Image (cartoon, rainbow, N blue to C red; front, side):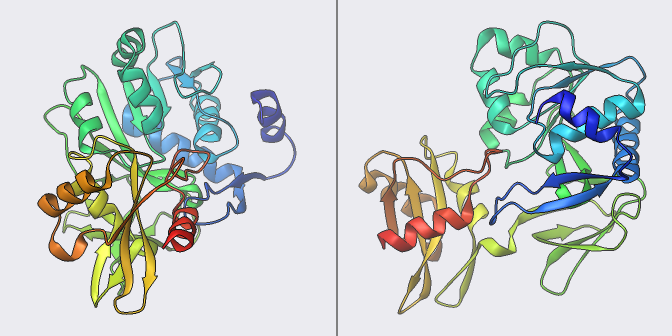
Length: 321
């Protein structure tokens, strides 16, 4: 979808807009989002960040998903000046920007381009969502002169409902919910969001979380991404988090069925010697978290928004093991 088509949809008589989930845990699903709730979400974000009418907002993500659509809605609702550029892995713009939203891959690519890094550092508020932000990326952003944020949210919450600072003295691993948003844990440890402005009913997520008394929270991983191996529950994202500083290669953790253990940890990678990987895993991971199989694939399965395509990864592992 291009900007002109989205603006036509936004200004038509329908009270809703068609959006699609990203498909990170399965097939993308169509949803109808209420325009009034999208406007409310836009106002909350702009208020939290202190954005003013006339501030320049960069649109550098595709309009097929909620993140891109919401950048346009924020500009329309809060009278920001929208600067639209061609969506790409390394976006380009040539004027000062007050507010931009990107996925981790875009930020990573710009950091490794001298001119791109300079442009990135000049953004007054940069929000990053749509995928995990690893320690290496966060460290690279630590000394940025302006505010860099990680977002928490999903299509159903019309983009994010909480932010955490990635740089500066207030950098934190814990997300702060927006005003009017409350969070709690369900019996299975998954986060429950109550955000009546953007979603009519409480929304139980599949994110295993920890919530502190002040309502700040952190995400441990997806409930769908738990590996039950020999009676031990292993969170895929936690294994990836521990390995990422030590494995300088693209990789992904998934699972496969096993007669004796029920499920086993499987590591998918695009290259590198499996014996080297195994040695690192033995040094870094607890005994029961270590991959039982290491599989080389041509390309790691990713969604269109750059997230790990977990269902496809599990299918690959099932075929190989």
